[in-house]
Image (cartoon, rainbow, N blue to C red; front, side):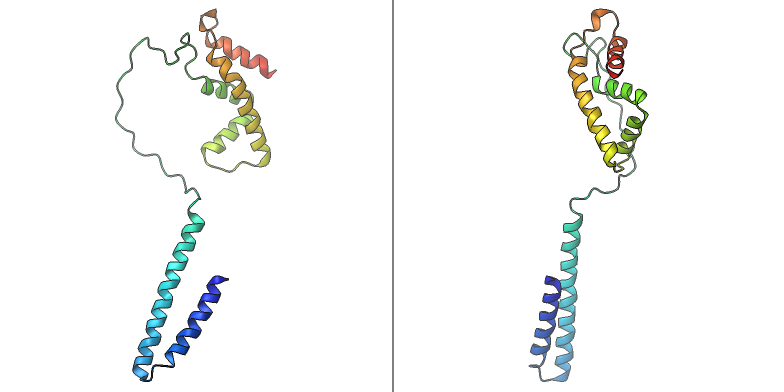
Length: 163
Protein backbone atom coordinates (compact mmCIF):
# COMPACT_ATOMS: atom_id res chain seq x y z
CA UNK A 1 0.00 0.00 0.00
CA UNK A 2 2.76 2.46 0.91
CA UNK A 3 4.45 1.69 -2.37
CA UNK A 4 1.43 2.79 -4.42
CA UNK A 5 0.89 5.91 -2.33
CA UNK A 6 4.55 6.86 -2.78
CA UNK A 7 4.42 6.14 -6.53
CA UNK A 8 1.28 8.22 -7.02
CA UNK A 9 2.60 11.17 -5.01
CA UNK A 10 5.98 11.01 -6.74
CA UNK A 11 4.31 11.04 -10.18
CA UNK A 12 2.06 13.99 -9.33
CA UNK A 13 4.86 16.05 -7.78
CA UNK A 14 7.10 15.34 -10.78
CA UNK A 15 4.41 16.51 -13.19
CA UNK A 16 3.64 19.63 -11.12
CA UNK A 17 7.30 20.59 -10.73
CA UNK A 18 7.88 19.77 -14.41
CA UNK A 19 5.32 22.45 -15.35
CA UNK A 20 7.58 25.07 -13.78
CA UNK A 21 10.35 24.35 -16.30
CA UNK A 22 9.73 26.49 -19.39
CA UNK A 23 12.36 25.33 -21.91
CA UNK A 24 11.21 22.14 -23.75
CA UNK A 25 14.72 20.68 -23.84
CA UNK A 26 15.16 21.18 -20.09
CA UNK A 27 11.68 19.74 -19.51
CA UNK A 28 12.68 16.48 -21.28
CA UNK A 29 15.90 16.32 -19.24
CA UNK A 30 13.93 16.96 -16.04
CA UNK A 31 11.42 14.17 -16.76
CA UNK A 32 14.18 11.72 -17.71
CA UNK A 33 16.01 12.59 -14.49
CA UNK A 34 12.82 12.04 -12.49
CA UNK A 35 12.33 8.68 -14.26
CA UNK A 36 15.89 7.59 -13.42
CA UNK A 37 15.41 8.69 -9.81
CA UNK A 38 12.15 6.74 -9.64
CA UNK A 39 13.80 3.59 -11.04
CA UNK A 40 16.65 3.94 -8.51
CA UNK A 41 14.26 4.37 -5.59
CA UNK A 42 12.27 1.34 -6.79
CA UNK A 43 15.48 -0.67 -6.88
CA UNK A 44 16.28 0.29 -3.29
CA UNK A 45 12.72 -0.50 -2.18
CA UNK A 46 12.65 -3.93 -3.82
CA UNK A 47 16.13 -4.81 -2.55
CA UNK A 48 15.19 -4.00 1.05
CA UNK A 49 11.86 -5.84 0.71
CA UNK A 50 13.60 -8.91 -0.75
CA UNK A 51 16.17 -8.89 2.07
CA UNK A 52 13.46 -8.64 4.74
CA UNK A 53 11.60 -11.61 3.28
CA UNK A 54 14.65 -13.87 2.97
CA UNK A 55 16.77 -12.95 5.98
CA UNK A 56 15.36 -15.68 8.26
CA UNK A 57 15.08 -18.48 5.69
CA UNK A 58 17.66 -21.23 5.52
CA UNK A 59 19.25 -21.75 2.17
CA UNK A 60 19.62 -24.98 0.26
CA UNK A 61 22.08 -27.35 1.88
CA UNK A 62 25.23 -27.44 -0.22
CA UNK A 63 27.61 -30.25 -1.05
CA UNK A 64 30.01 -31.52 1.55
CA UNK A 65 33.40 -29.87 1.28
CA UNK A 66 36.76 -31.51 0.83
CA UNK A 67 37.95 -33.52 3.82
CA UNK A 68 40.54 -31.85 6.00
CA UNK A 69 43.85 -33.13 7.24
CA UNK A 70 43.61 -36.03 9.70
CA UNK A 71 44.13 -35.09 13.33
CA UNK A 72 46.58 -36.49 15.83
CA UNK A 73 46.09 -40.00 17.13
CA UNK A 74 44.62 -40.26 20.61
CA UNK A 75 46.25 -41.93 23.58
CA UNK A 76 45.48 -45.60 24.09
CA UNK A 77 43.58 -46.44 27.25
CA UNK A 78 42.08 -42.99 27.75
CA UNK A 79 38.34 -43.06 28.29
CA UNK A 80 36.01 -40.39 26.95
CA UNK A 81 33.69 -40.61 29.94
CA UNK A 82 35.14 -39.91 33.36
CA UNK A 83 32.78 -42.06 35.48
CA UNK A 84 33.84 -45.71 35.44
CA UNK A 85 34.85 -45.41 31.77
CA UNK A 86 31.25 -46.16 30.71
CA UNK A 87 29.67 -46.17 27.28
CA UNK A 88 31.39 -43.54 25.15
CA UNK A 89 28.50 -42.25 23.02
CA UNK A 90 25.21 -43.05 24.70
CA UNK A 91 22.89 -40.95 22.55
CA UNK A 92 24.09 -42.47 19.27
CA UNK A 93 23.81 -45.98 20.65
CA UNK A 94 20.24 -45.38 21.92
CA UNK A 95 19.17 -43.77 18.63
CA UNK A 96 20.70 -46.66 16.68
CA UNK A 97 18.79 -49.22 18.74
CA UNK A 98 15.54 -47.30 18.38
CA UNK A 99 16.03 -47.06 14.61
CA UNK A 100 16.42 -50.84 14.50
CA UNK A 101 13.15 -51.34 16.37
CA UNK A 102 11.08 -48.55 14.76
CA UNK A 103 11.47 -48.23 10.99
CA UNK A 104 9.47 -45.01 10.79
CA UNK A 105 11.78 -43.40 13.38
CA UNK A 106 14.69 -44.18 11.08
CA UNK A 107 12.88 -42.58 8.14
CA UNK A 108 12.12 -39.52 10.31
CA UNK A 109 15.82 -39.12 11.16
CA UNK A 110 16.70 -39.50 7.48
CA UNK A 111 14.21 -36.74 6.64
CA UNK A 112 15.76 -34.51 9.30
CA UNK A 113 19.26 -35.18 7.94
CA UNK A 114 18.02 -34.30 4.45
CA UNK A 115 16.42 -31.03 5.72
CA UNK A 116 12.92 -32.18 4.72
CA UNK A 117 9.82 -30.97 6.56
CA UNK A 118 8.07 -33.42 8.89
CA UNK A 119 4.29 -33.77 8.98
CA UNK A 120 2.38 -33.54 12.28
CA UNK A 121 2.41 -37.29 12.93
CA UNK A 122 6.15 -37.53 12.33
CA UNK A 123 6.75 -34.53 14.59
CA UNK A 124 4.82 -36.20 17.42
CA UNK A 125 6.79 -39.45 16.96
CA UNK A 126 10.05 -37.48 17.02
CA UNK A 127 9.04 -35.67 20.24
CA UNK A 128 8.04 -38.95 21.90
CA UNK A 129 11.31 -40.63 20.93
CA UNK A 130 13.33 -37.62 22.14
CA UNK A 131 11.59 -37.83 25.53
CA UNK A 132 12.36 -41.54 25.67
CA UNK A 133 16.01 -40.91 24.76
CA UNK A 134 16.28 -38.22 27.44
CA UNK A 135 14.99 -40.74 30.01
CA UNK A 136 17.49 -43.41 28.96
CA UNK A 137 20.47 -41.07 28.57
CA UNK A 138 21.27 -40.58 32.29
CA UNK A 139 20.92 -44.33 32.89
CA UNK A 140 23.34 -44.99 30.05
CA UNK A 141 25.87 -42.45 31.28
CA UNK A 142 25.83 -43.97 34.77
CA UNK A 143 25.78 -47.59 33.55
CA UNK A 144 28.38 -49.79 35.23
CA UNK A 145 30.47 -51.47 32.53
CA UNK A 146 32.05 -53.78 35.11
CA UNK A 147 28.94 -55.92 35.64
CA UNK A 148 30.07 -58.36 32.94
CA UNK A 149 27.53 -57.63 30.22
CA UNK A 150 29.18 -54.47 28.87
CA UNK A 151 27.37 -52.55 26.15
CA UNK A 152 25.13 -55.49 25.29
CA UNK A 153 23.76 -55.33 28.84
CA UNK A 154 22.51 -51.80 28.30
CA UNK A 155 21.15 -52.75 24.87
CA UNK A 156 19.11 -55.41 26.67
CA UNK A 157 17.80 -52.71 29.03
CA UNK A 158 16.69 -50.66 26.02
CA UNK A 159 15.00 -53.65 24.44
CA UNK A 160 13.23 -54.59 27.69
CA UNK A 161 11.84 -51.07 28.13
CA UNK A 162 10.51 -51.06 24.55
CA UNK A 163 8.45 -54.23 25.06
